[in-house]
Length: 46
Image 1: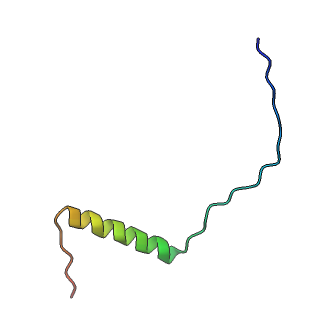
Image 2 (image 1 turned 180 degrees about the vertical axis):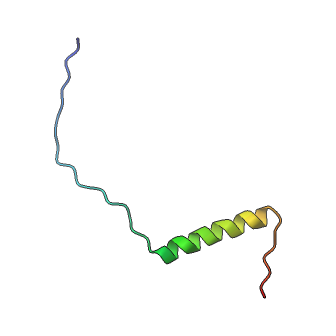
Image 3 (image 1 turned 60 degrees about the vertical axis):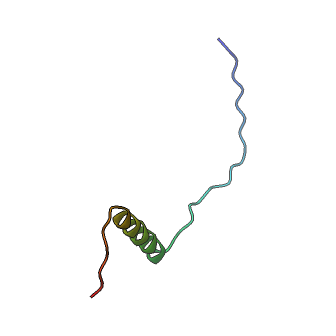
């Protein structure tokens, strides 16, 4: 068997960056529009 060394250190909790729903919505819309354009689709307003 081999010896194992375990050390304990204080670890700061990492929290994910909280983005507002509006920012996430804008990112999703942008991605969907880019995919549609890449597929040859055009958006029409009206």
